[in-house]
Amino acid sequence: MDNTSSGSGFSGPGLPSAYFSPASSSFADFLRAASPELLPARRVPAGAAELDAPHGTTIVAVAFARGVLIAGDRRATSGNLIASRDIEKVHVTDEYSAVGIAGTAGLAVEMVRLYAVELAHYEKIEGVSLSLDGKTNKLAGMVKANLEMAMAGLAVVPLFVGYDLEAEDAKHAGRIVSYDAAGGRYEEHAGYASVGSGSLFAKSSLKKLYDPDADVDAAVRTALEALYDAADDDTASGGPDLVRRIFPNVITITAEEGAAVLPAERIGTVVEAVVAGRAERTHHRQS
Amino acid sequence: MPLYASPEQLMRERSELARKGISRGRSVVVLKYSGGVLFVAENMSATLHKVAEIYDRIGFAAVGRFSEFENLRVAGIRHADLKGYQYDRRDVSARALANAYAATLGSIFTEQLKPFEVEVCLAEVGATADEDQLYRLTFDGGIFDESPFVVMGGQTDPISAKLKDLVDPAHDLATALGTAIEGLRAASPATNGNGAAAEAEQIKLEVAVLDRARPRRAFRRLSGAALEALLPAKAEPVEKPADGEGDSGGDSGKDDAEKK
Image (cartoon, rainbow over all chains, first blue to last red; front, top):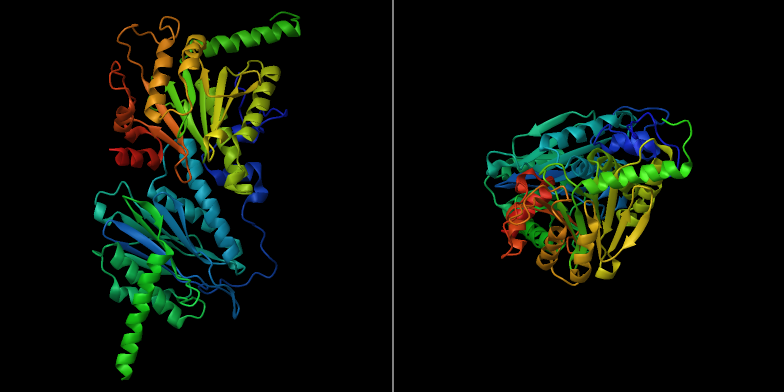
């Protein structure tokens, strides 16, 4: 008398049987069954090339006392041309997590969008949120699914930050997880991480500036210094545009406020201080 | 099974079956208030929910057979998430989902051996009070646009009669909650399946709101300290479901903390 076993769909009007399948709380799995054409494309273009070098971007993540933040530059490049000056590379994915993505812009945006819906979908169906590890594993699965495209040169490499509500030590509840193009998942215990073509420069900068006991303002300053250094040496990462007032995007995650996008004015103030500091050092040295 | 039964008789028997199943259970009240839509359900369980979130501005409440309306709930969430993903979050409406539910329930009523013994209410909250919508879906595929309240399950007549005079969409949340509880008490306990004494009645409640003011996801469960703060002060003691921890998602937990 079970009207809704997945085998016996009713062919009449109304919700199709795939909607009633008891299977999973995963939105991506449901898409595969109901509307596979909406999943990120799986066809591999002809002439697969080797895995690309790190991509045009710098994303940095910095953990601070009782929280974590993620920041990204605003430039998208296509060869030697600037494709976009104000692209948003870091996104809030749910109340206590955010993701920044390096790589092919179109695929990256699609992946983040699907990921955010995936997290909310699970929470609505199950009644509870995924654990932080569950969320990061899910993201690893999505990156892995993109491996064929990655090997054709269209890689997508995310950087995940989240506030772990179940952490024993609230001071270190901010967590950072990095990925590689093959879907490998790495917890970053150092307290900072970076991904993208400018990541080497950003990491060197963070290595010297990072303070695990910093408050949110100091951590924001550290992240913006690192992005400035990355943009200084990597053409594919954009520095602050003081003329147009385009600054890096920053998202902070704390227990009190959850995931919050910092307003541009506040970032602008800090960026101007960073730039002024650099100008002073340069002129001081030259004089 | 008889060799032949007239279609009318079949339909009548199915209706009987569904109606009996629904009236045997406990009641759910959904009503509009100034800040959005309030759901109040009599629910002995703290974990098997009758009220749930479907999408950013859409909520779901149901009575009847749990496994059947659980299926509808999951299908509704999938429908909404798919539409929102395919187009945009703003393109998801309760009306479209209500139509889909009505068609589904109608199909099941006529084509399956046993109808779904459920009644469903879909609520959508808009930018202003005029844009709030309530839909009631019946086991046979009926769809009704209701305002300003919906009563389902158990003995609905005494509750409706009581609420007709009391419900006012301009009330604030605490007043609306008091009204809903009064309405639920109006149902005669003997026939309502509550099984409790008439006087010092302990009703376990599942309460949730669609709060217009919240930036994206309007749905919020009220339990524990947050719910206690809103209950009518002089009323008889009412048992609340388990506090915030057992409830869904980070949302309600965080809001309980804020409400303190």
